[in-house]
Image (cartoon, rainbow, N blue to C red; front, top):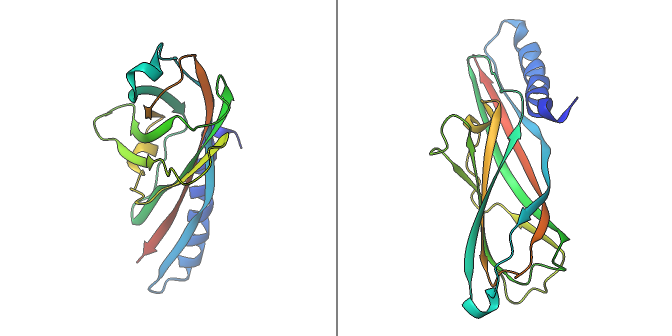
Length: 184
């Protein structure tokens, strides 16, 4: 299955199990967890901030998109898809994320970017050592189902801190999970 069809494929598999279980004709209520999936955006480039150290903390935003097949679900299902967590891996121009004080990542669909859901809100923990991999767990995962119902998702990442003076890049790995419920 290619990466553009992964979410619909997983949901279709879960639906097949649910609908097969309901074929017996009796009252039925079934719930299934959707297996965790990862969406990776490689080498997201951030421009350096000349004299960034002299200004202190500054913020920068970056937007990128992810094409996928629109998620189409049959009537009668209650479905949720939410972010489990996000991982950043340093690629070029930086050795670690010590400069990063805050990060916000949102997801919207291409049709209505005003209906963004927050995937991650990160605040640096100064007691933890800086590494080249930053793993963040979603503290209050919002339902991102509507953002998967179109053919392209838009992601906006805002970083704040004493940003590097040179260009830098990171891989962004987003993990999603969810559930499907059927009652009749």
